[in-house]
Length: 167
Image 1 (cartoon, rainbow, N blue to C red):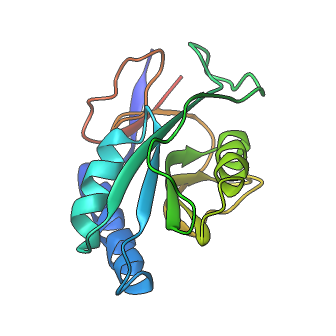
Image 2 (cartoon, one colour):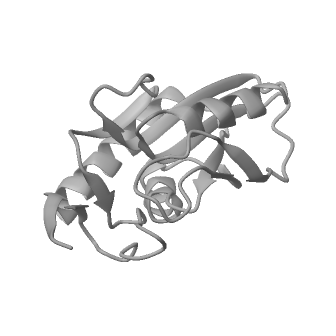
């Protein structure tokens, strides 16, 4: 399987720093609850937390729709819920990539039912043509299945420092 670099480590870090600055400005004086969508988000979320330069709380939710395939099944299942109560909190859902947007839509609907004060979204990568545009987007990409920087194919290639397209 061939891989070509889509985003370099430097491009990713610049995008993360820019997102962190915007989020810190928008949430100044508040302590947002960042909810990372596992598993792919863990690398991005760790870097984002350091880039925000505010006190934040971090929580995780896990939704599954891909399995070992390169195409979403279309069915999103919440398999791990948040433990901290988001009621009355400023919640920012953090995703690695928004492709079909089904996962993000399902997570937002699920968390919205828990009555946060505000509920916004952030994604490192947004696929061109995605049905949904998060409130914060770091990078935009065209077609191709992406791996690296936490993104995986069947649990492989998460540890790459850049983001590559495979196929």
